[in-house]
Length: 512
Ligand code: BES
Ligand code: ZN
Ligand code: ZN
Image (cartoon, rainbow, N blue to C red; front, side, top):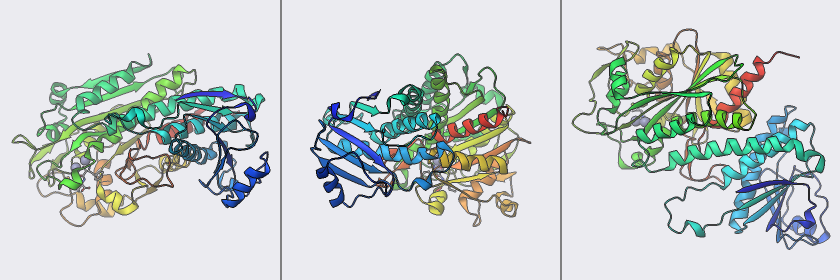
């Protein structure tokens, strides 16, 4: 999609459609009587994601005028960035309608929105572009008639003349961020026989090449064996594919803080010998969604640097990648493995493989001694049972970090909710033959068990949180209230990670 900023008057634009965004109960101005009549008939009042269509609007060259509701302006707080989730969604809604109408050119008229600060304009344009690209995304690489699918080729963003210049950095950011997220979505949506651990490593290498400040360390099978990453090796044992631990390290000048992200990268989860029923195995190509989001965060850091807007924070992106398969070599129930940090684990269920590979990844990452570790993992079906498909489950050991994650989530629009990690439930981790068991033999809640288990592998004095993204990482049934998330991968967590880093940089900046 070609994206341009302009201050040309609306009546000179010859795009197929022009889109206007309005807040709830805000009077719609600058339209002729016919158009206003049409809007009235559609009972449009600007409610969130509501739409109204006017055909052949008088005085405009465009074929259609679409209004998209932004909901209550009061939902947007003093903080300018708090408007972003709304703007993103509204842009996604607009692009979907445009595609339905087979538009190939589109204009977003942003001249009627009020800008409180110049910062707001950049944030607005950024969010609109992200919304357009994320909402317009379709995974259609394998459809032979994909050329025939409607595609918006050109998006023109119309702004008041005095805002054009400041909007440019927002446009560049929006493009950089969306491109990174779409790359992650593609990785997740690709079939499991196409994206195997080696292909995830190749994707990480490509990202590392984007910036001189990004370095990459890859532990292959022989390094993993030599250094005792036996939990990762145990999960990989049943697969023909070799496992990897990949560490992307972003180290810009003037970084004051260090934060690490860890991602689960199971490129296909069959369940292992405790094999899943066929229906539960469907979508298990997306069991590497956590790793893909971590890669997207690293890509964003590199892309933001290349447009001259670097984030001064040291970041690690650690992914552990393998398949969970069956064969005569596969890990067996009743096996006992000794992990990288020395703790032993009794394998009760081979399908609880994510926590095993993450145990080793958390040990590796703890050795880097970051201030915070955030892990993204499609860990449990129980997280979906508890919170549904739209919310991720958030757990952790550090109150300030949990608070920051919740703020980041409010800005990114990626929903999450806390679950407790009570010591009271720690007894479920106990095994009679090893230090820990990977699944409770009793009736422990699985999502919380996962969090308690991972906590055992976090180094001392490191703030950590675990985000179980089993629900929101992949859309099986589209929801019309979530136009940003078309069927398939969402790359949930990528934007959240970036927002967290921005909050941390803000906090590190000397107060004026
Ligand atoms: N990858 C799955 C979790 C999952 C389920 C992700 C559904 C996305 C959608 C994970 O490896 C798994 O199989 N977990 C088991 C754990 C159980 C054996 C304790 C589960 O949730 O059933
Ligand atoms: Zn599993
Ligand atoms: Zn899994």
